[in-house]
Image: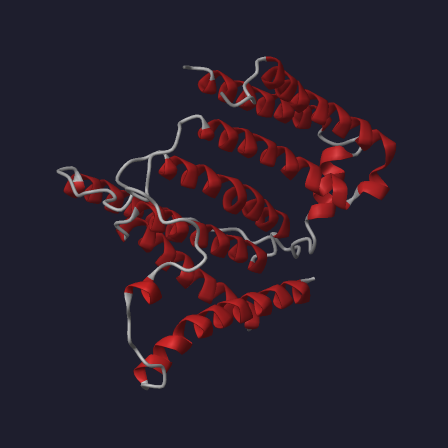
Length: 123
Length: 162
């Protein structure tokens, strides 16, 4: 059981090391004068990072986006209930299936309500 | 041995990330440090053989709460300026220090009881039988669904304000 998590731990260590190596290698190469340093505006410009922004990059977004985050949080809590059920699905049988069906239906009422109230539409 | 090492590494990273949340001036970077803190706490749960709790931590905290916080930051002005110091700095520090002292005192003074049985190795399957089998907690599960429904309806009401 714990050996699987050991693999995940090994994986995350490799991820962190890989990221650090990728960031530090150019710095070391520049420090050792292997990479020449002749900056000009075109070289310093953002490359394949989208359009350059006009005005400030950090703008205030519309308040209505927050609604989607709240809905996402509520449905994420539903997933917490579905996850142990899905792990043990075969052994639990038909009874638990109906339990989960009722569970999802109760949450679905909220979705239908939002749909009918036209909250999901973007104006 | 390896488990203890993993526990302490993640504990140290969690504390450093939590300090980063407090001390970083840029609010967005503070939010990213908070995500790192959540991930290491999930790792701590795994080393304490609470694997379902770790999965929930990743799902809800790393997945949803962080999105909620980052979206809230998207709606604030002056992200880079962050939270400037104000007059409540010293009173807040005193209250936080007293709270920390009380918590350390309680944790060290409580006679913690250690169960004679070893913890269940995968906790997810026993939890599923407890929640969804015929002798399980069916009604609390459905009540929890009603609570989620209430949360969704509340979000709709907030969104329809204007």
